[in-house]
Image 1: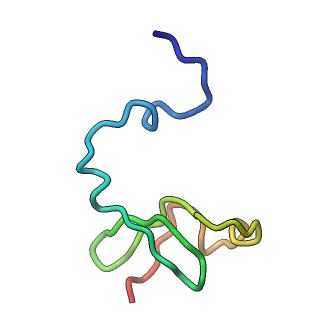
Image 2: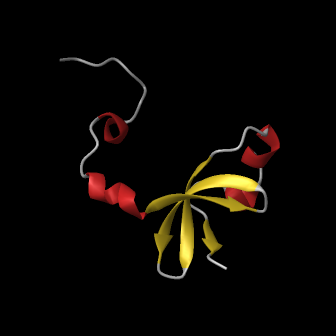
Image 3: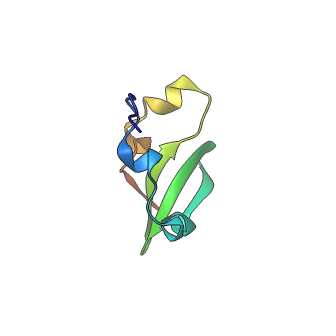
Length: 69
């Protein structure tokens, strides 16, 4: 099977479902985020907001770390 797509391979052929057990949805300063817990911080995976201005915030870009408190 050949897939002609711009979607990354990791999304189409997901490896292990246990990797997704660490992910959760939280509200951070009124912005819904998909995060992954790492020790004392959350690492942002995806911004789930419908407000375009939330995507321009430097503190909320994917890969950034936010405090759990």
